Length: 353
Image (cartoon, rainbow, N blue to C red; front, side, top):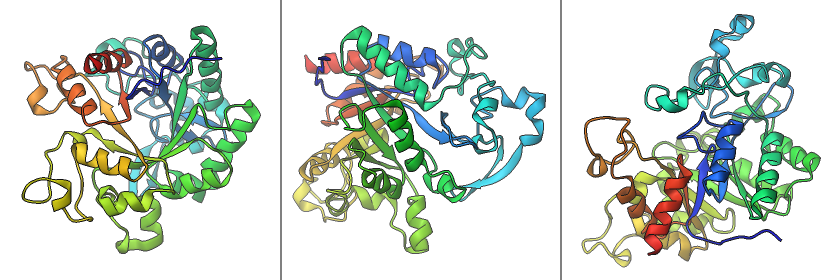
């Protein structure tokens, strides 16, 4: 029997311990487990031959050495992904055998020079590799370790014959992994893929990622200009509409750090059911609708902290990360994505008194 601390909020290693090692590498994930992360978050994209690969995006020039590899120079191309034209190298143009020859590099190299010193040391990983890493960590530490899997650009991949939900279900079955859902959370900025994952009988929690601006790509494709903005999903009415369809929402930390808006006295009753919610009001309304709330991404560097928590003039220096992390945790949020899992664990401990 594996121990589950049940501590709240859940501390989720964002792409592993990505503040210390290049993201989505074996070293980043293993370090996240060692630093006490309750879960790790892989971003999932697909190769040309249908292998699920762990990369921040399907365009991989920023996180691998592909641009320096002469044998792949001809693969550089421009492609429209989710309405934006991108130029680079895309996972769907490579087989896994080709991708496996690449080496990872730090995406934020100018800011995280210590992590960048590991550039070129690690190959990129498949989803099935992470299944094994999680199982090994759980066995060694005798505790429950979860995966929070993010499905990237699901509509794009479905349109080119690489449906992520179908490929993911097959990977779970091949690995004999946790289809019952105890260790699995699935998230996406698109509701359609979450619906399809549920329809396939995968019983992990499904969480809708709510972007700061714009509208969900799948809804835009279906409704065009009539597609609701992401803001519409984090109103009282929007959260109630998500209840029963998903198990939770995940929002950028700015929504939880923002000052309350709405009625003249700031109380929930004085706001309309269609007012966009922030801070503890958002968390309380989601909980009332039976939804859990996650937030991303808590980082300690001044570059990422809100202005009131920055200290000194260096973008790379750590500011008052404890103050900002604590402010987020105080909203009652259920899970925090962090690049430095040890800092997330420490902030949770501090807030618990």
